[in-house]
Image 1 (spheres, helix red, strand yellow):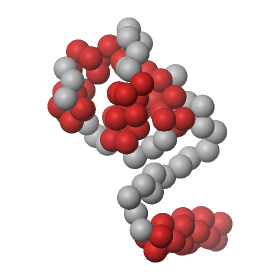
Image 2 (cartoon, helix red, strand yellow; image 1 turned 30 degrees about the vertical axis):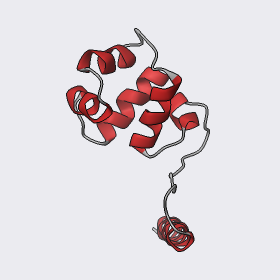
Image 3 (cartoon, rainbow, N blue to C red; image 1 turned 90 degrees about the horizontal axis):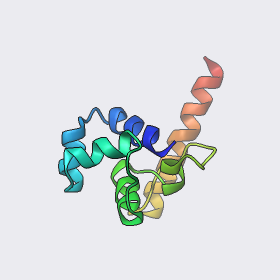
Image 4 (cartoon, rainbow, N blue to C red; image 1 turned 90 degrees about the vertical axis):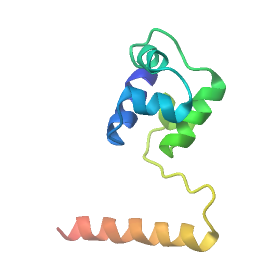
Length: 96
């Protein structure tokens, strides 16, 4: 599950393995090994990956059962704007 999620979130950002590796300061082979389930990233690297993708470590590990958006670093007002946007999108989907 972890290997699949690393690949999925990398591809959602339209990144190659090389680009992800450069962003995390690891080798392309390291990213390849994670995605092919040859080795597991360290706990520290799991945290870096989650932060890079803007998701929780639970989502990265596949144990989160719902979608989430990381709002770390946003002000209270900005978080409220995000919540309002999500509510607007839900309402638009229900009407369409």
